[in-house]
Length: 94
Image (cartoon, rainbow, N blue to C red):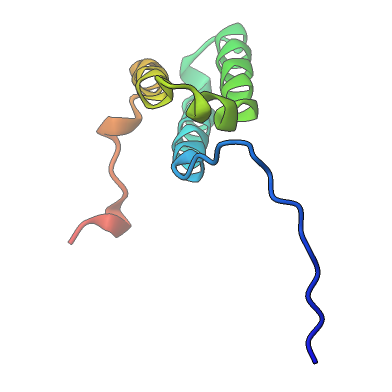
């Protein structure tokens, strides 16, 4: 007979898009690293620290009522710096 064990279920809201958003911010971090020579060291440090703060709070941000709008706004701001949306991956082209 199989033994059933009770597991504690968290009541915290789950943000299903959190993994997607995390990957998007990580892409911005990678893009920033690739452009390091074009920015001052201070700009790189500040941008990376901001990305780290967002990544560290992604679940909390998603759980907010306006979380998706807030994250979308943050992604647009990082895109203004990294230009990620203008990059294309040749492996993704058909």
